[in-house]
Length: 433
Image 1 (cartoon, rainbow, N blue to C red):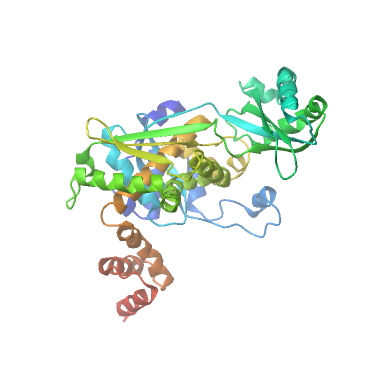
Image 2 (cartoon, rainbow, N blue to C red):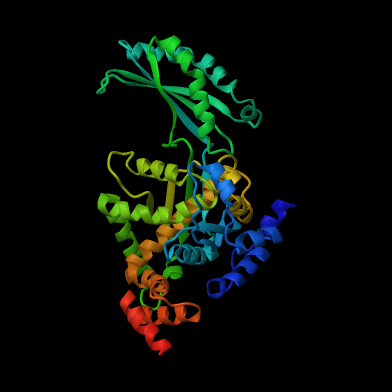
């Protein structure tokens, strides 16, 4: 029943951005077939009770709220998704939704992913024969895997578990020779940190016995290079044309923007930040660890020796602009804040994803859409025109506007391209005068 409902969902919500928050919420409840309890959860402040927050982290004194928005128009692998995004930055949700709308008639986003494999590292020191220790560990592979899997029968029952090991040798470090054992673990629908950490601690005595060394660190790696998610989009020139620019001119400008990010780390840092503008809000909304995702993304961006773009943009033989994004994406549906935060659970109900891999694929599609929006703007009128128009609302509020005043002041700030607090105060005084 849930799968049938999910297939019937349409992410094309007409005029959504121009509705009031209450009307948007009502539209979301209808489109995503949410319950009245879900409606109440989003409609009222304080969705995370202090008592629950106190069980999540230490020294709790309150909670901190961020805007919870919905990106619309997304079609991924032929299925529509409404995308929950938690973010404070203006234009992010709008940009992702707009790009999704442009690519929607042309097949939307195609995605795929690898198995949810995570690495646990076990560091061994005090060795005089690190290469010999490596071979001894490889010889004890079956024993190590069996011990690791004995710690998590539930994961084994779900089809996951430790699949293999790797052994890395660092013959020269500031602290002498080291060997690092990697456990390669299929964590299924979990992010996997607790699972792999426990396995690493479990096998540590065996590692010491086999190598004759001393184990120090026993912890996961957030460079999830075996747990990749991929997204692809292909758009014909006519879909990108505007009144000021032809589709072909738009593509040329976007390729130029990408080329700079591919060769220059100063540009790549901002280019990739734009990608994470799309990814992080989905990760936060679903209660996942956005710091882990950021860490893995930036290591992946420099895996070939220099920091570069996470995306690629090119033109196919039909003249279409083709964008691709492949990156580590260690997301979970179980454990941590995904289970304890009420709004994270609601975000997953809105998304209607059934596996962690599906969540990862949808999230990467949002990152690709966000990047597409950024380089499209940079290739034409510049990033500030659209961004500052949306930022004008924030400035109007800072100046003291409320209710209908916000839209009137923001509209005038955007029209004159003069988005300043002192100018907003002048406009507000004029309205009230």
